[in-house]
Amino acid sequence: LTAPLRFPPAVSGCIRECAEAQSKDFGLIATEQGWNLYVCGNGGSKPRHADLLASDVDKHTAIKFVDRFLMYYIRTADPLCRTARWIEKLDGGIEHLRDVVVHDSLGIAGELEAEMESLVQSYVCEWTDVVQNPAKQIRFQHFNNDKSGDETVKFVQERGQKRTPEWVGDLALVETSPTGDATRVPEETDTAAHWWEVGPIADFPEDGGIALKYGNTQIALFHFAMHGTWYATQNLCPHKRDMVLARGLTGDLDGIPKVACPHHKKQFSLETGECLTGDPYSIQTFPVKVVGDKVYVKLPAQDILLENTCASERPCESLVEPMKAGV
Image 1 (cartoon, rainbow, N blue to C red):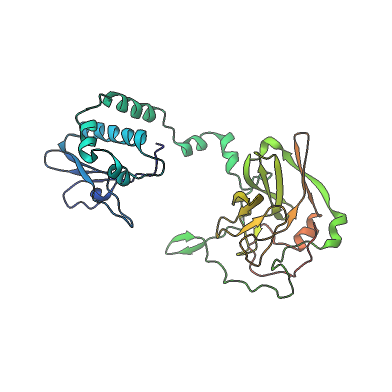
Image 2: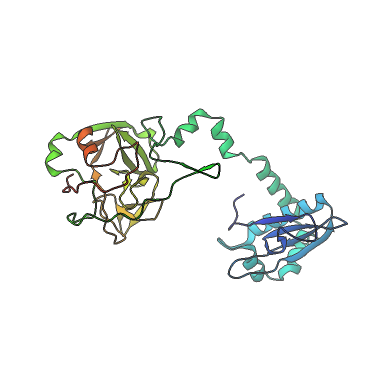
């Protein structure tokens, strides 16, 4: 259900009100005669106690009123406006809302219910759809060119359950490295670089990134479909040394195409690799070209790249020898 903003609901089965339904966008509390319906509550930094919209209504009527309330809110609220702020601005406040929802003063109750029913009938669980559709499951592969998983993701056992381990403590930067980065390829290896065909254009997301397995390391490929541009970088974020940049948030900063690490939002230029957030890090970038419907990335030989970066099947836990920027 697409609404101006999120609307947490709650249902309490008794007057103890453990679900705190009177502080939610809509809440139902069981009574001896049926249900009390509260609306337009809000917690957080500017709390608002919900208003009683209807009392002691049966289950069918309660659901009908909720449907009308939600659709009227969606129709009339400003974008990013929660129900608490909406009711404060609404002419007539809760009395007007009660007239519309309970007494159908505008004669639109049938329309509101029909709109909600249409949404209910068109609902599809996106995750169930993926589980039942092998073609869509391809979108969730870690590597675009390899069906294996990301083996840098490790787990530890704790109290009979598994969790990801804590990060290794902050790593000291190598003093002799002017960029604070340790995954640069030596300048002299450029002669060994070649254009690697990574696949057809249709195999890659239009606006975002995806990881590629290159020998025993990882490359992040980004496509900015709106501008028709492509970028390739190391997949390793030099901050915590995790292979995550391909899953980062893409965009631009003053016209500079960038990716933000999904962990700590360190931002890097996709053109130069420099850190745009002022941190002493940088990433390796690689040229990309499109020939026909094929995408190519210019990379050093696999063994040369592996010598200067981290293998794809193990986390990076220490800095390697700093190298002079190449490509």
